[in-house]
Every structure is written in C-alpha cells, then in structure tokens.
Image 1 (cartoon, rainbow, N blue to C red):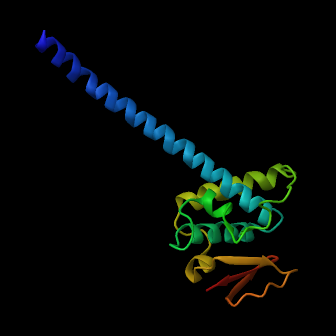
Image 2 (tube, rainbow, N blue to C red):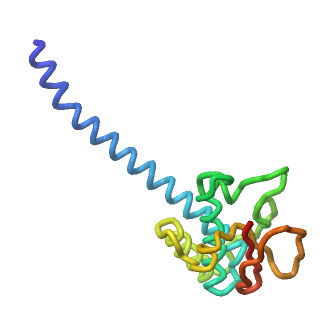
Image 3 (cartoon, rainbow, N blue to C red):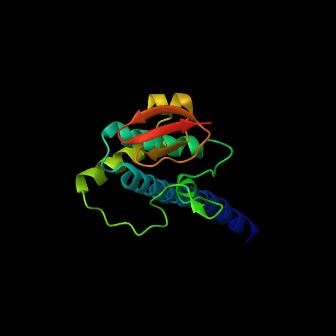
Length: 158
C-alpha cells in the first residue's frame, strides 16, 4: 500500500509542478498584457497625435521612470502614480474620450510592446534619462535640465 501511494505521489508531482509553471506563464502573460495596455493608453493620451518619434519619447520616459528607484516598479503604477494628490500624467484622472483613431491606437500598442521588450527605444530620452515632459503650450515652474523638444513636447531630466 505504501509503495503504491509513493508511486502515485511521485507520478503526480511533475504534473502539479507542470501545472504551476503553466499558471505562472499565464500570470506573467496577463500581467504583460496589462502593462502593455497601460503603456499604450499613456502613449495614446499623451502623444497620440504626435509623430512616431514623439510617441517613442513618451514611452521611453515612462520606462525611464519604471527603471528608476524613485518611482514605482511597474508601468501601470508609474502611469497612475499620484504625488501630493496630483497624477503624474495629465490625462489620468480626467475624463478621456474613447479611441478616436484606430491607426494611432494600433501604433501606440506596437510602441508599448516594443518599450516593454527593448531596453532603449528612443536614444536621446534613454541616454539623458529624461523622466519629465510637458506640452509646449504650458510653462511649468520646474528646476530641471532641458533635454529636447520632440513634436509638441519638451523633455527634461534632473
């Protein structure tokens, strides 16, 4: 009886282990999908009408923040972060319209996938470690180092 139990147990352990691996893969896959969606929304609502390079720059800023110890560790946490009650990206917390341009949205999703799988997608923003930007129609009082103008956005680093 003991021998039969042990044989059954040893036969099931690899199956249970394999099931755990599948569950982990599914969890990572679901999380990656969520992170891509958060990134794509951030690119779309911050730079959806900007040229391709502007979308890449916004994605790189988001990743620069995600990879910096002063910011949260996931894209979604960075995108939805509040500091002193203020969202860090202007569209968050506002009533945003749905996706109006399917083409722009698809481009943002493709860039989001790239941003989450490649270390560097915009050379200047990556090299300067820029973590801040604003539209050129506003003039925030920031004591930051200006890095570049890309489309209608100005980018900064500490």
